[in-house]
Image 1 (cartoon, helix red, strand yellow):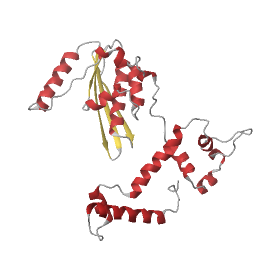
Image 2 (tube, one colour):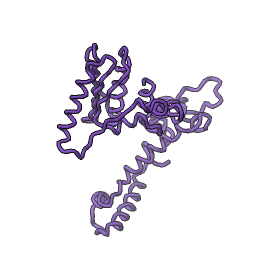
Image 3 (cartoon, one colour):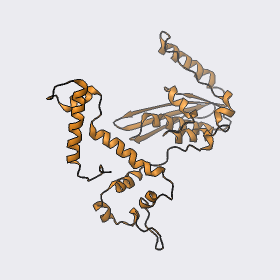
Image 4 (cartoon, one colour):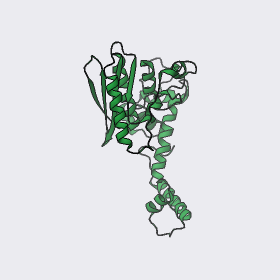
Length: 269
């Protein structure tokens, strides 16, 4: 509750840094004159400021999970109060000047929550037992894995890919989706190629900032499947991707931050 924006925390941080330094010295048996950053890194202890930031961000997200009638939800309501509102004492009743002057954990939580959108739904029907696509159509999906123990693995795998593309490129009801994603300087680039017989090659490139490589990979698969499903008379989709782990996440029914993409993909299929 005391670690928030504009909070006077220098005294508290000084005490916590001393405690953590003593703990790191005790763990390693190091000299008292050893630098704090070095012994913390060797002991495998996260710097205290980063640890506080982590638990603070978790606590800022926690109010979003509360029911709508909870008192914290009413206090954090950012909408302006109505004239006949029974609870005018919320953040939405503050002016912009008052918000800049107000300090506290609730204000920080309200600001951080503006950039958060629901990323998973544990009760989504696409993941309900008996309604999951992998339960009803388990014989319609297959994964072709690469045997990494083989010699000349890259040459053998490239030959298999060439044979697969040549054998399926002339089949009218088959769509071939090749996807890839990479991140450089916090900018994610997602590329997808969709090929189907008697249709022009579809190439798309998307850019996004400050997302994980997993999100970029799943978005690329999602967009490629969306484009393939929009083609006429397509009954078979082949996806070529360099991460089989991300392809399996599409059928993972556990709640995760990637469930938004997985749900959209399953609805398309």
